[in-house]
Image 1 (cartoon, helix red, strand yellow):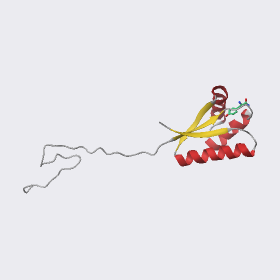
Image 2 (cartoon, helix red, strand yellow; image 1 turned 30 degrees about the vertical axis):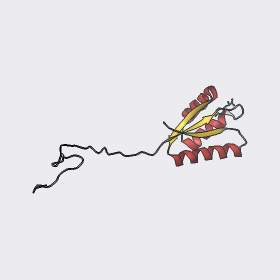
Image 3 (cartoon, helix red, strand yellow; image 1 turned 90 degrees about the vertical axis):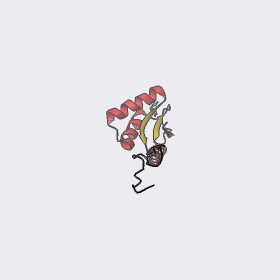
Length: 112
Ligand code: TYC
């Protein structure tokens, strides 16, 4: 270069060539995980509603609606969380169900 400063960069044209390269700023977000509750024939409906209120901060009406969806369709997404939070929720639900001797199942699944 002769004299003038090179002001090239992501947003400035390069004085030295006609080739412009755009560097796309890529901010990677961590993957999210769906937490799902599964139906079974034995866990009482009230217990599932209680679990959804207690561990997912749902209102009684929201919890009841999700419980009914699971009962009718077989499963439902309860919420979407980071890997660590999803893992904690699943562990809390599974432990609580086991301690009350109900076969309620809770799993997590990576979001597309
Ligand atoms: N199917 C259960 C019953 O009839 C109720 C139930 C709902 C169980 C949701 C599990 O995730 C569940 N008592």
